Length: 380
Figure 1 (cartoon, rainbow, N blue to C red):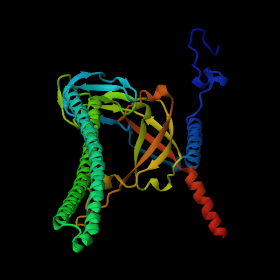
Figure 2: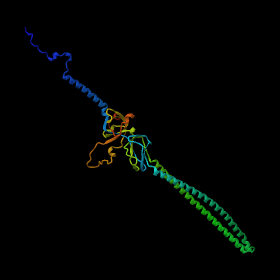
Figure 3: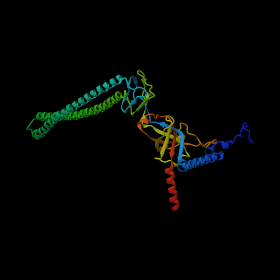
Figure 4: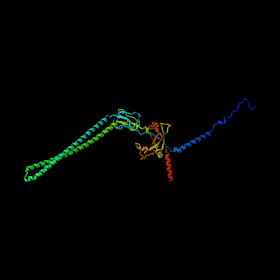
């Protein structure tokens, strides 16, 4: 026998022990598949970049902003009441702080009393004018009587003069008539002077009336100022928003312009992105924007370009750079771009001023328009 019953059999190769349907792919096949996948991914990325990516201008130098208002009093005084708490929402016109009103109430009362005194002066001057007008009428009547008497005396002298010359009347009679005429003329002159004096008195009374009216206007202006000061003891909010940076306390003495708190209009938050000067050439108002807020990971917000700053950030710095020097070094400047955020009230409630944002601006509209303009220029 060629084979012994107890002798061990020879093991088969591994390839022969596995079924042909479950054979593992070779390394070459795996590499080819990976290469195809990478090629497809690269092609998709390249297509995406060619159609979209090369038109996107991005920056992470962007922060949320709000046009907040610092609240300060217009008058000085001690704070008696603070109506708002930290982070409280307020509406336009809501009272925020109340100052002590006593000194301003006293000033208003004094101004009103001055108005009453000036009105009394006007009434007195008007009464004096009426009295002087009566005096003028009386003096003019006396002047007319004196004029008639003087005329009669003069006529008597002229009528008796021929009789005295012929001796029909005595010289004593002529002297008596002459004396009467002279007295009448003197009385006429006195009455005429009384009329002039009365007229001058009415001129003085008219000037006093004008002065009293001017003083009344000044007193009314003073009362109006006192009334404004009294109203300004209640400091009100000029806009709606949320109270922040509240430093005012009851009992504190404040001066006009003292910073007490800040009202932040959180419902009107906008984005201010600082793009490089090499990025803004293709940007236009109205272009779409995508935003990624660091405080909202995984969320994409949308907006549009609203406006551009009239200068770079360095132009509005406290100490603008002086480039006309020998140690000049060119630095890429940043242009602030204001972006309007299009989102709902719920999301906007968490968009606080100062948060960091990454911004992507789609400039395809400007590039396509420039391409059309260039094409038209070439055809022309």
